[in-house]
Image 1 (tube, rainbow, N blue to C red):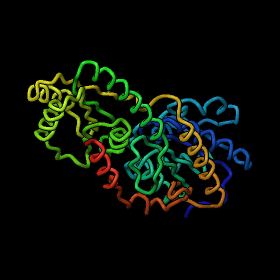
Image 2 (image 1 turned 90 degrees about the vertical axis):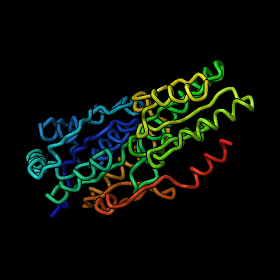
Image 3 (image 1 turned 135 degrees about the horizontal axis):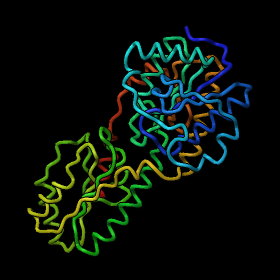
Image 4 (image 1 turned 180 degrees about the vertical axis):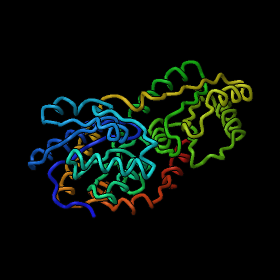
Length: 325
């Protein structure tokens, strides 16, 4: 049974980093301190928890951090947290350091760890932090807005040189299992094609035919946004160039999408989510995930959140294809 009286809260970031995580950390720290709680930061996610890399945080410790990308607490993957032994050790360490409430900022894998700790008596609240926008219970995840704007600006630059040289450009954005970055960039950058993990059976022959038809009409460039989950961008470029005779280049934007100063949206939404996570813990709630739906900040049971499925909105994808015409 989770404890109800919260005196000390811990905060950690887990999984991939995302711009805006620092805003969430700052909000957790300052909201907690404002409510008379002690706040402890856990470095390097669950791995740092198991290694007891735990520090006290003051309001000054999070000063001048809201505009910084990445996470000041650092992050890491932790296979040990997937085991029952690792989970029990983590719960015992929380107890040792007096941490009776824990805020976990990360994705689905991070929430699964929070769920286990909740069952072992540590009040836990998750905050969705991932640039992939792939958490089903929420329409917003920390970092997506910054990442998609970073990718959009990079693609605009590639289009400039692609037009100058009359090239086909295949631009690979992040998204191993989810195509939201690719879809949004495809619409925002006016791409001719969007390739996503959710539509993995794309027809390369149809792309070749379309490129040839566009060249006949005098089109100077052809932009393909390719999600990381499809990949193979360099070889795809070689095949398309051989088939069309049009110079084709692959550009992999890569980890620059994770970094950089967060947008206003990522700073504000992350701050509100961080404060809400503290409020939920103070109210004695546990095993919850903060989300954003229909213009409101809401919370869900972690079990319910993890069971939800998310898919690419078909209408948005249809719009992207229609506008490419």
